[in-house]
Length: 425
Image (cartoon, rainbow, N blue to C red; front, side, top):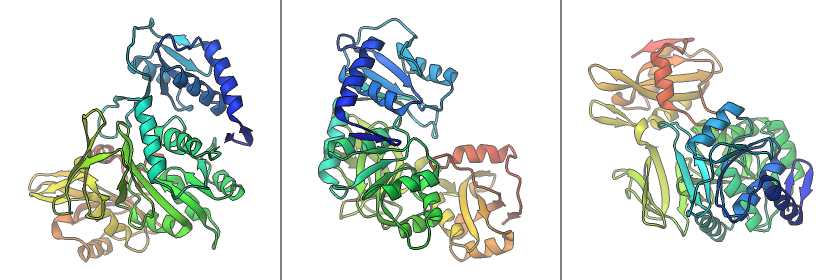
């Protein structure tokens, strides 16, 4: 069974509705087509998703807020033959192609590290991931997954919904990310396990009255900034973290998050190659079942106890006169200063050192450049110190809490950030 909004739907409903939609849409097991789906109605989207998957076809889920023109571009880019945009009529984009490939879940990468690219995963690989996830991560048994993130994304679809169904739980799909509504659903749910973005978790932690906690929550997608981590950890009885990428799915889970950088222990189906200590940290390279490898562009290492530890994004690392600076170290030092609420460190070209560190930060009050410079000087090495510090009303983050440092650097170079205070060290 699945609860969507206030309604509860059993398996029989989805079996019947999926069969109806498959017939109306002309989807059957005789032709393994590629279909793009963008539905604002979560129930209809999931029924059509099950119909496409069960027919052995391929589906590109598109976020329901996507405008038609953008959805059509995504569908064409993914090579889909039809687009279902809030209609079962299905716009024909191309003639059906002979396709001997197994059905796949099609996704577009986020584009934070380059142009978005198409990623395809077979239903079999997803089945293996789900079984590995459920068998090794047993802490949520008896909990109710509350999915307060899009089921058009693999995090909500696979880990929140399909894993919950595999556990014989009744997933609760929250069709809004309004924090107050999410909090209401959590209060109404017995032993909830919340799947949502770090940004929503952070807002919930601030909304909760004193003494009230969240039973359990999962975080994924980005390393929690230290102030967020401390706030969220204090308001969750159980806090989990998972790590992976679109190409490989979830590969590691931390069943008890006590440090934001501890991504988790590798799942049984996953293989990873990286360093074995902070000193030997290297790119985390994942190996798929077919022997192919996936470079994550994440710098990390495996501790002797098997914990996968994240250090930095490779493309975020700043090389100051031959010395590596990890933005997270600078941000942690800045946000540890009383009054500062958020910070992002990024690369800035320097004619002497090649690259230097720049810092955007927000605070509840005006922070003088001298005071921040003095604070950072007590917590960072000289090559880690920002050459420029700009106080802004709000640090630019994406909806899921991620930071696109390349975009921040480009916007900064274009003069997009008007400082409340600016200091040069």
